Structures are given as C-alpha cells and as structure tokens.
Length: 131
Ligand code: FES
Image (tube, rainbow, N blue to C red; front, side, top):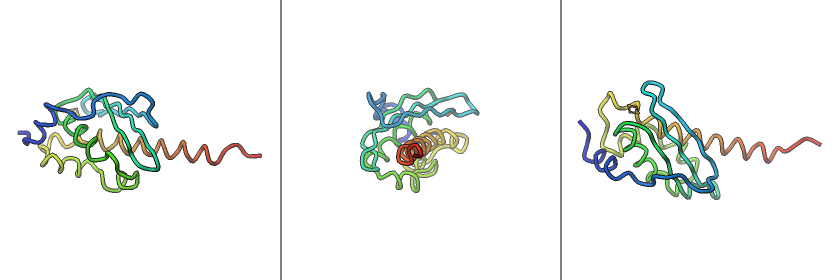
C-alpha cells in the first residue's frame, strides 16, 4: 500500500533530532489519531538553514516529516509558505494512500506554523514598546 519512497524514508528517516539552539520550535498534533510532531528550525537571512524533528506517528507521518525536512533545507521562507503543502509533500513520496493523506498535514502544518511564529516574533521585536 506504500510506495518505495515512503518505505525508504520510513526505514531511514532523515534529520531526526532537535536543534540545540533553534530559531523556532513548534509542536503540532493530528487530532484524528493523536500523533504528534515536534519541529525545530534554524532560520538565517529569511531562509531555513537547518531542520530537525521528533515524531510520534505512523509510517506515513514519519516518511512525510522526513521528506519534508529534505525539501525545505536551504529554502527561503516564502517558498516554504507558498510551495510546501500536504500535496507537494505527498507527491515527493510518489503519493500516499487516500486514507493516509491526513498524515502529511502534520509536516506541512508544523512548517507553516513555525514560520508564522517566527514572523510574529520578528514583528513584535521591531514594533517594540511605544515611547
Ligand atoms: Fe496518525 Fe498517520 S495515522 S499521522
């Protein structure tokens, strides 16, 4: 039921771990099954320079987190926001069974959520206290 690429990433997940001093750290969960993903990013010059994660989830969730971590390494934040979706992640694995499509939501959701958090923190820093 899984493609060769899904099995390959499931058996050898890339970039597992947590960055020691991440720029941003987020946790997301998939309410339908209770699985979760903890994602850490290093961001420099509006670009992802490192990504590591820990995941509690099914084979599809592990494979999607793994391939997504490879897809976004080195990418500008705008590219991640505009081009990395649950569909593009599933496509990079040559597809997922329909009943497993929701599993790719965690990786896409965590990436977008992390970038939103990062941008919010930057905006708050730049607006500063009013004089
Ligand atoms: Fe929970 Fe796949 S069944 S993420």
